[in-house]
Image (cartoon, rainbow, N blue to C red; front, side, top):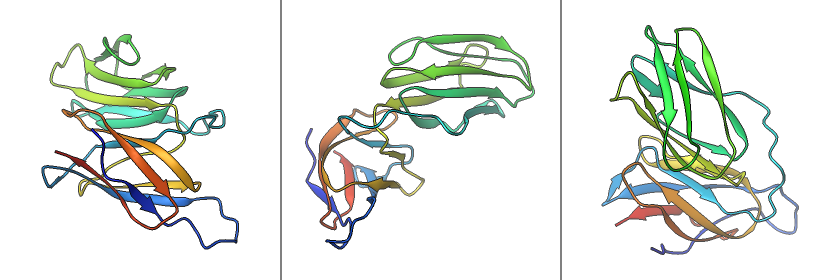
Length: 188
């Protein structure tokens, strides 16, 4: 489904600038969507170099964060910060893995080496669920409780954007960065 064209102010020309912050909101049937993942396609993006650790914690029998977006090639540490054993796995779509049982105070690492959505579960605690969306783009964000999101340092130009939310379909559209409008994502 195509969404309306949206644009964002980049900078005052002719001064050079590194890029603009793309901001907007995500809504479903008029209500704010928390945990929506938004990313821009960037053909020929520079290679990814991970500079800081990315951690999904298991605490109080929940994953934190519940929804994570990372660039393809990111190493994610699944840390057991709980009071019990966990067995983290993903068996379909995205990255398939099974970390086996591991105790409190330890962590195991998964490299998300291909684009796509990985649904994450715990074999021991079936109510535990999380999502890791790996994207082949340096420009991405996750919406907050109010449905707001921001993507930093986006160069001027026309982009295809994608948006996904738990329980919803991925949608796509076009955005022109540089003209002054927010990028508002709407699921019908």
